[in-house]
Figure 1 (spheres, rainbow over the protein chains, first blue to last red):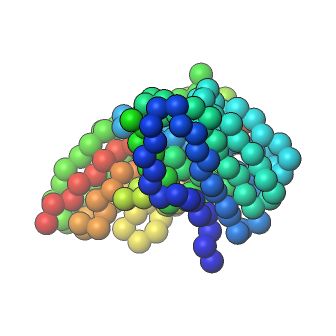
Figure 2: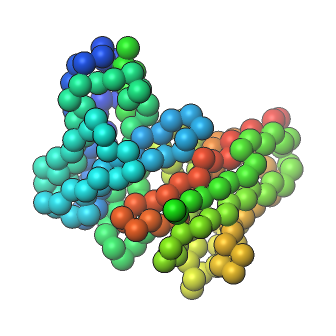
Amino acid sequence: NAGVTQTPKFQVLKTGQSMTLQCAQDMNHNSMYWYRQDPGMGLRLIYYSASEGTTDKGEVPNGYNVSRLNKREFSLRLESAAPSQTSVYFCASRVGAVRETQYFGPGTRLLVL
Amino acid sequence: EDKVVQSPLSLVVHEGDTVTLNCSYEVTNFRSLLWYKQEKKAPTFLFMLTSSGIEKKSGRLSSILDKKELFSILNITATQTGDSAIYLCAVGGSQGNLIFGKGTKLSVKP
């Protein structure tokens, strides 16, 4: 039972490059989330998908786009990376509106030079 | 604005000590408060407290919720070096997300 998986684990980008962070869950959860974690800032919501076919902005969406490819997969895209996007990115999922508990992937550490 | 404040931000104790971590919150339409433990990687779920379940216990860890005073505490008794981690407190947000505090970094020395 893999739970929530993320790829890649680590990535180095140059300013202006683009990349997509992948997330998949095998728990048949309806809702999926992307957070970033920065020192002293806690976890902040970037985008979320309450159910397949819907996506919405969170607290810090600028510079990012998302795609809910199907029920299992939720990707995060950086079109033109900036040093301010250096962070650890976590994907999470939860069953849906009934249960609040979210389950997190192992994270992607991104360094933008 | 919804917010979660944890204290202390960091704590150093010795094995066998008992620690208390604090979490206060302000949120519209409170539904639940969650505690997570984060070691090297992903936050892992510890407890969820709601109006119908204001006290939880699992082994050496326990947590209570005070809905009147808007805070929660996480207690760890007989601490071990394996308890060293960042402990995160979160409450449910209006977007279905979790609103996290900045965490308490606990270091347990042998």
